[in-house]
Image (spheres, helix red, strand yellow):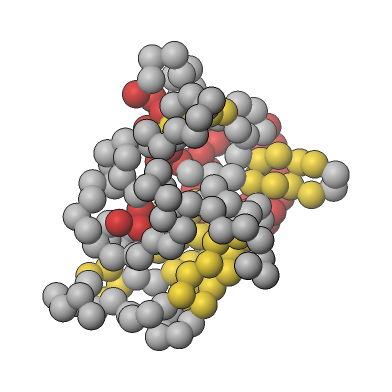
Length: 193
């Protein structure tokens, strides 16, 4: 409550999501990353701040990483300003069948949004790909594909990201406007506890 109002993780209204392998297909339109053991590429969540608490470590894997979206933006402006401009344009995303009243099944928002001297970012490539299931959503252009490829490659550059191995009791707070986060694939222990 010190950070703000807790918002639901999903259409079921869950304010907390347990990161464990529930066998969910991450590639399916409604697949959520925290319900699968799949590697999650660098992304942001749809909230100002997301918090993670390590209750138990995984049997193996599950390393977390963060990267500054402002650094990625500045690198894109320096190296490929044409692609940075593409990411400041319309990018269509799937709501994963979790639709608020009065909203549609997809929405449009840029990856980079410069505003009042700061650059706000939102990037979830899987939801861009999943939005292609709607015929009214424009197809991903070769320029947008190249721009997202370049952004993802920069995020994967060891010069920019920071890896973390969570231990029991560790907490991580990520401001989704300025940081992207990632997780390697993992294996749960067979015993739920």
